Image (tube, rainbow, N blue to C red; front, side, top):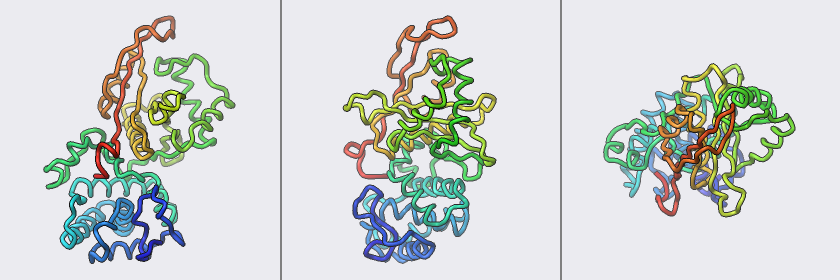
Length: 332
């Protein structure tokens, strides 16, 4: 707990963010009351507390009921503490939606687990830039009323698919999905299916800075997976990553690839990476369109660099620059 007895106001990366007990329902209720009564200074109403406030209302009133109460609480708080840069309509709605999605994905979790997971998942307020361009999010229209995302849709809280970090339990499903593309597609230039030992080593190499994820339906079935990998092992490339996205054959056109890639972009932003690079076979028009829709730009063309299925293949390079604190300010 912080000195004022409320849940943490520091971001997760702040060494001052310490608690002597896990966050519980009383903490969230006390935070909501303090915000409504403007009982804490503007400087102490941080990104982390904003997330926890949304979690309180989502748990108490559901995804739809939470938004109206969030608006009311923030309007009351801002009336007492006029912000230099406040949480306006679109930001409030977007964060409430993402928090509701997190709560739906982990419906059986205890309050402290929900809170901890939420602060870890969205430790950077720039996660909204996976869905909105900066210009759109900070526009006058976005301040006046809710503005829809221009990069990727906000996830629906109840669509039955959740994305989580991959574990060893998922390796068989990951390999089953990948094997189809090795044998029948140019989505990967691999021509042999990795052994289980090789896939275990792959997962072990995807640590906290380079997550591997799976998309899981309500019954636990893995329907797709994604990963962020080191672009180049040279030290100076440490904050440049490459993405991979694979959807189980037969489950395309359901938005799964977009969901997986949107989640990867959000994670890359939260982890402080600078850019995401995609290498796409020249005949994979759907993949190019997906990346372009999520803010990736053309970065180059490598001609005849792959040979698979008895033909030479080009590689299209695409790149998405990520928000950078030194350039883009503190947070939306």
